[in-house]
Length: 289
Ligand SMILES: NC(=O)c1ccc[n+]([C@@H]2O[C@H](COP(=O)([O-])OP(=O)(O)OC[C@H]3O[C@@H](n4cnc5c(N)ncnc54)[C@H](OP(=O)(O)O)[C@@H]3O)[C@@H](O)[C@H]2O)c1
Image (cartoon, rainbow, N blue to C red; front, side):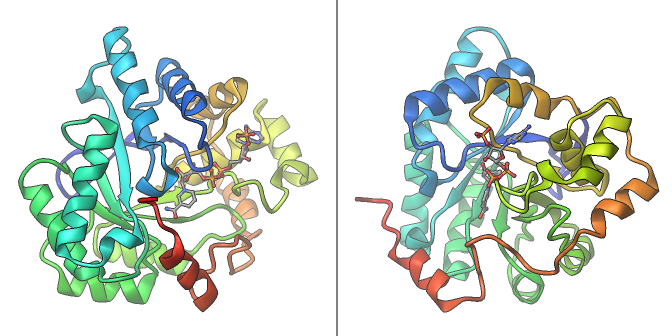
């Protein structure tokens, strides 16, 4: 495992385990427990995934079983749009995440979208950061103009920006902006998120075979070699294991370029951040029942 140093001085693992679309709590707890047993130390959840409690249970089980200590782990969660309406709602949202997970602190906590009153919400994040409840604070889906405006305005610069990143959407301009402000890029959907058909691509299959690796491992290796933290999700144990084995081979410069050339220049997901329908959908998502 390799680590990247955040602007707080903390070390963040370059690979983690994501739990988006694992709503079944028992399944989520078991998969996170197994991921920690395999060696993952970074877990990525969010208030809107409604599984912070399952992640917390897996963490306490792993610690109880002597697999690791709390200090070895790097647990991330995210504040949902609904809770970013004001300083007060954000403060409450942070408390809810801590309470649900049963954790004393998060290693990283992100504003999930650049929506609602994300400046007031950030002040609550900054206060929780100074209180030690959030060891690092960051953002997600903040595109270059928004991130620039944000970094030029706020007191605490985000440690991380988590955005969609894989060979089909390389987002070079976003990475340039993050580099300028020393914000660490974290890749969501590093395997393409079940889209783009990378697993059926004969060229990537050939590249993987040449390294005695799988297509998934090649995609994740491409991600970490370009300096982005990757957080693949799987509910299959053999894939969770496979996705972790990316630290014993290197892609050549030529192979890196070949994969980057797949860039479409736009996202093929349903998360169309510039589409008013997507934005209204985020506001409509009520996580408090
Ligand atoms: N901040 C945001 O807005 C945002 C948005 C999306 C995601 N995320 C975070 O990023 C994490 C990863 O993104 P993601 O879950 O969308 O996509 P992903 O990790 O790129 O892809 C997950 C998909 O790939 C499959 N898969 C996993 N390993 C595989 C392998 N070795 N071979 C073949 N297929 C494999 C999974 O299926 P199985 O589960 O059936 O194995 C699942 O369908 C999320 O879990 C979440 O933590 C954040």
